[in-house]
Image (cartoon, rainbow, N blue to C red; front, side, top):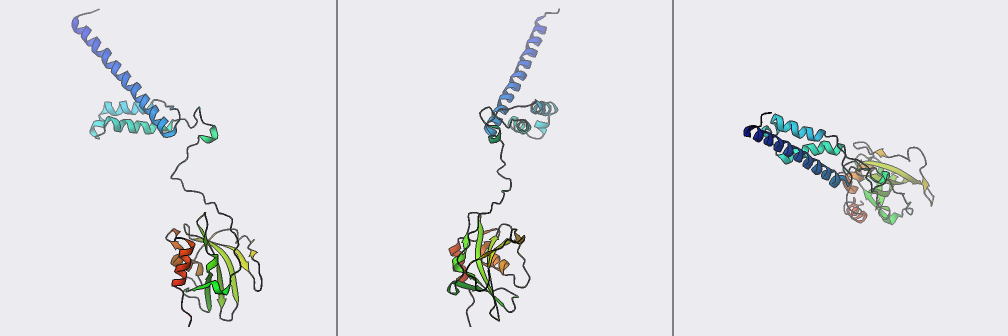
Length: 248
């Protein structure tokens, strides 16, 4: 075997370079494990694909040509490594360790609607609805409420020119522009009749641009601000009163 000083120097250089590569690989492994722990509080479990990405990018010069730093390459590698992170840690129960996406749409959970007292004429606030013809509309100011589920609930009294009345207790969702009919108050009745039909059990889109679209008018003009509730119930009632049509 040729053991000249030059060959010995070359062998030492090769061993040193291999040691540095192994050290860098172990350092990357520790860093990615730390990322998994920081992100989920769980153990890291990877297949080595992330490290091959770093090695390939370095060998092809992709990192240098793209202007990626070592930290940038490590971040890209970490993205792959996170896909292999365990979703169950030693200190967490299976059902408690499921990761929850904070950006996922939230499921609507409707609160139980409490029926208000029957409306009194002194508490009725009229409001204008375009294209109503012979009908007039009013909201019972005492019935307006905003629930924890962000549903605006209210009583509407619809009156015809002949004096016939239709009294309904309804709910409105500003986020999806839908309404629901909870109950009706028949003529001469003192108690509400819950709407137990299939129609009453579901939410329905409020229509605009049609005759007698009182619900859409309340949503657009008083109860909703785009897709959110327009303030408190007291503020809505004040707005209704300030814009109520004057009696002739």
